Image 1 (tube, rainbow, N blue to C red):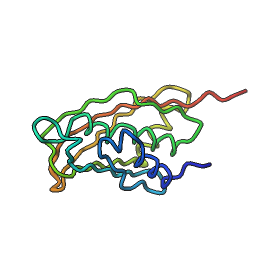
Image 2 (cartoon, helix red, strand yellow):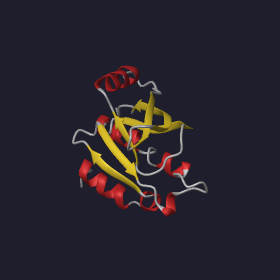
Image 3 (tube, rainbow, N blue to C red):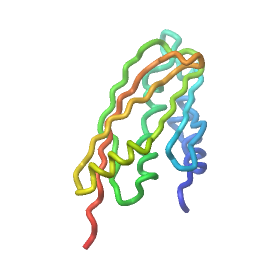
Image 4 (cartoon, rainbow, N blue to C red):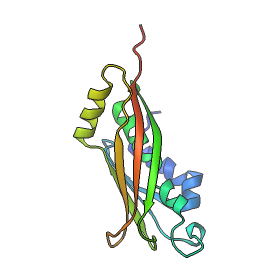
Length: 152
């Protein structure tokens, strides 16, 4: 069975850690280049001071860039998360959202930097915002990408 954006969205929305954190994948574009996720503030994802638990904020961002690039680049590439850092800007209350985008420039840089089998460590920044568009947190992610060796 081929993994489609619609199927992955369904899988992620019933995935235990996402259900437990109240995270919802709202949209995955047909070309895998854009993903939108959201999370409402609930009693089970609220911290001691009544705002979104930081771990849940990071969880809503964690797998998406890697999954997007795995599907865009195909089986000829290795794609892994390498590192991440989160900067909490203000308390998240209510519904928070994040949008991930992979551009033509991103793909060109990946292909150019991996064409001879070298690893490439692209950096991405993701913003988590509330319904008013105010910044809640910024996540900086570094991915590890390399072309697989061609079998002789």
